[in-house]
Figure: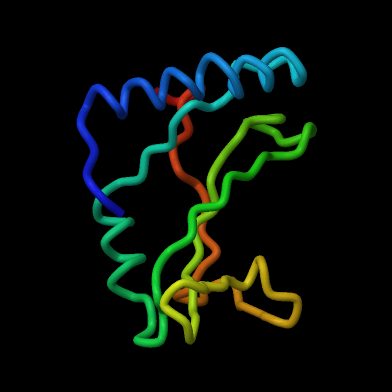
Length: 120
């Protein structure tokens, strides 16, 4: 992760909005999510509770089902801890065919970010 200047960040966000978001909006008939917010205390808790063998955090783009009670077809995020033996290869339980995690595992997966829209 490296810092970038604000102009570059705005350009990247605009590129997403003008390409992928417009396509998702049209295809699924929604005003789709364009950002997700996580309270700092929840984010710190997640990172601080990762086990020693964790190598990082992967943020998966995801989508609620069409029949979700509050956010049908909306894009969301799923955060999950990664592990790996190689500095360039980091795997998470979603990617691994034989991984299992309990609902309260410190590695995740976690959801329930505040997605904007609808919650901006």
